[in-house]
Length: 263
Image (cartoon, rainbow, N blue to C red; front, top):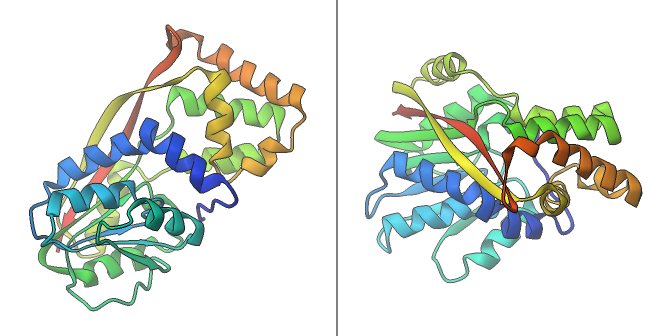
């Protein structure tokens, strides 16, 4: 499974999803890792680089920060945004990054681990790249939120069950026990999983749903709908989330699990 955006997807992702969703989770992940000045950090599946940039702000000019992603369009946007920040950008598959062993003090990945096609190989690569005593953390969704439940049901009804399953699979992530077992089997020590919950605050469905779906890999399927079908899909989501409307905003709970391990 991969998360691939094309066309205007990376632009929408950075302008809409990063400030409303991923930027907030990036802050929570980086806070959990307590990055120190001068540490060397690798951000895996960095996307447009929100976590990468935040990591750089924590380690300072003496720290090294690199971002790696297989998606060339996302990396291009990351480079554009981070111009002048002295961040390295690497286009690579996660299982064979090809850098020297013990290159980093910290490896992190926000919402990337679920998409890795060979998780044991990826974890083995992370452990190889970490220095002795280094730490690694992956942040992934803890199942569905009220919003993602509603959007997947609407996609199934107005687009297709196959497209809905593609969207739904983004939240079908390993359990706490599975995460602990996977990191432990890869040789990490002091493995723990920490649940983080935030109240997400986004525009109402009428505005947010087209922007959200336009930044997803299924954007083409949504855009192929006629105007009436698009509006019906949005209305369906709006009706499902009526209990979460606060003024002119949708406010709902969401959660991630952060799996942490040491070399």
